[in-house]
Amino acid sequence: MAPHKARFGAKPGEERGPRQGAPRREGTDSPRPRPDPAARREEDRAPANTIWLHGLHAVAAAILNPRRRLRRLLLTPDAEAALTARLPPGSFAARKLQPERVEDRARFHTFLPEDSIHQGAALLAEPLPGVALDDALAASPGPVLLLDQVTDPRNVGAILRSAAAFGAAAVVVQDRHAPPETGALARAASGALEIVPMVREVNLARAIRHLQDGGAWVMGLAGEATRTLAEAKPSDRRVGLVLGAEGGGLRRLQRETCDELVRLPIGEAMESLNVAAAAAVALYEIGRA
Image 1 (cartoon, rainbow, N blue to C red):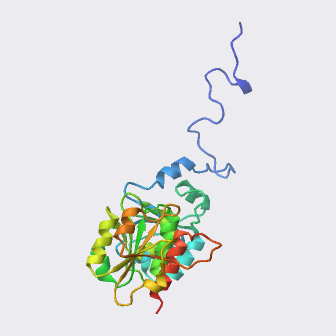
Image 2: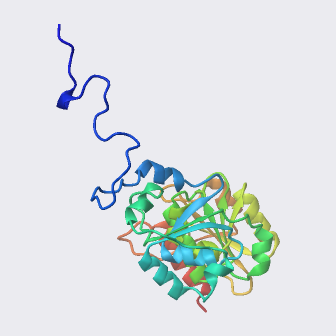
């Protein structure tokens, strides 16, 4: 039987295509090999105890926050121009950052979720160090929000944004029933994660009692409450406001620990508000003279 011949006339055992190691002639138009997406993904994978922050507001706020430890900064040309205009002169040098230029925006999706609105900016950073509730209270006389098992990072981020806008001292979350610090949470907070302390407590009822021991009046938001927030809010002491997760609302222990349950006067056509929207309305009411 005649031996099998390789295709294209190659003898058995011969390589197909160009010889390995053959010198490339200058002036040829052979395209350069494209970077391997898997290799880029490995290069940009977040090491342990780091996260990728993204979006111009979140990245700019992190660069301006001296408590935030920074590792790498990836920017498209447009994002670099926008960020440079937004930050004080010399901010990159002060934080020892050398921006890495990204020409292909698809690179961001090798380490960010596909639906991320990154605006051409990504910052590799370490999570913020924890803040004690007493330290947050000492730094600001503002109201305190306490979230009872609110787990959606977009809601928590939006609540942080409202907290920063209305001068809240802290947002208190449960250690085991709250989202971790992520790029999505920071993006939803639009920079507020760097401004308002997010305090993690093991026991929310204990945190409520601690606020009460310090003289705060702690109210829980509940649709069936008799009095409205406007009627019940004190003018001579700090306010604590407890908000429950959508659907379940406040749990029994939190209800019993609060000084009073209050409601927002919404129309009968709607049963309730999204927890982030309710937080914004309540913070406005608390701050209104």
